[in-house]
Amino acid sequence: MQVMLRPKALIFVGMCLLSSGLTAPAVSAAGQGVGSPAGARDSDWLLSPELLDHARLKFVWQQTLPMKKGETFAAVALLGDRLYLRSDRNYMWSLGTDGGNVVFSRSVAPRGIPVLDLVSYGDSLISVVGNQLTECTMVTGVEQRVADLELSIVAPPVRNSQYFYVAAGDRRLHVLRAHDLVRIFKVAPENESLITTVLADDTTVVFGTTAGNIVAMMADAPKKLWQFDAAGAVAGPIIRDGNSFYFASKDTNVYRLDVTGATTAPMAWKFQTEAVLDRAPRVTQRFVYQYALGRGVTAIDKQTGQAVWSLPEGLDLLAEAENKAYLITKVRTLAVMDNATGKMLYSLNGAPIAAHAANTESARIYIVDEHGRVACLTPVR
Image 1 (tube, rainbow, N blue to C red):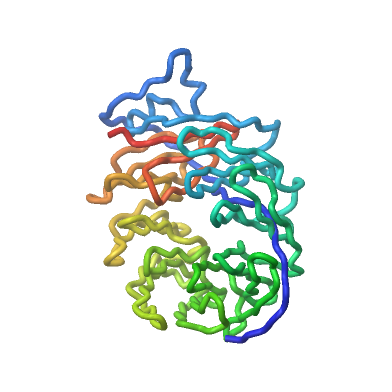
Image 2 (image 1 turned 90 degrees about the horizontal axis):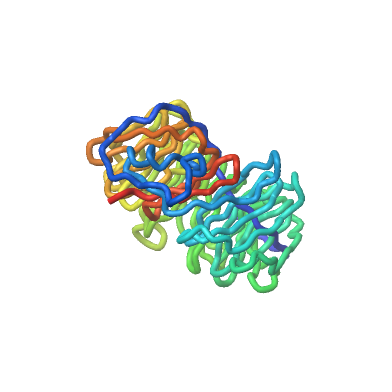
């Protein structure tokens, strides 16, 4: 690992939305009905409550955001108890997940300015707007700090209690003191490959590269702890779950690494998808869900690394609950899979859905349509 030094700065708010396609007839199934409130028509809802009843789902809340004519959602991100939505005109809303109330709304950048994915730390939101690092408060969305680091930032910056970690186009990870953004040191992979994803806590920083390297180093010093090398580039973010790290590689495999000591992180398993991967897995309490181009979504047992089921038309995980997985599909349907049997239980026409947030922490489903309607759904018990 190379070590070097140099000072830097920061940049602002962003977020992430996966747009999705869907379409297919609903399949009826027994379940409790969830009716509309008095005076509400089915056309007022993002999805028909009667159709949701077939898949044993119901509305928790629905909110309609004031979108301008021709404006669409460009990003949707679920961070803790907030849902963040950014339009293609770089206007952002923060909604509380409990009731869909608007916490704040504001323009984060002029239209056309690139905005990287949103990251949270404490009560702050961190992103890159244009090529500036920006922090804003979660309460009001007001900018706390905006800095030009004089770097070409290539991945969402992350931070811990002491430092920011910024991957740049110079193939270095720049470590900046959090309170004043003074450059402390910088590091590079031994093969000089581009760093595309970073995660950090107060003791360890882990980053992935275009050469397939997963490198862990001390959080406060340029000292490498361990390294794992896959045969292809890391696809999307690395996901940490306890002492395990999950990531997808363009070598067609999904990997799990287990940290077994300060300087050891052997491979626990790898699962071959037989397709070049372009995004990170979704990791829940018991399963890993991986999308592969041309193969759909595969559910992998977290402990064994063996496939439980595969849905060829699957596009992404929406949520998981009581051994059921809720997915959005490429043919515009909302599918419910049984993780015990590997069979599809229900399929619901989801044609109005334009975008979604993947939820790996709870059973709630967050979807949006092109008219600015945002809805939270939950399974009926």
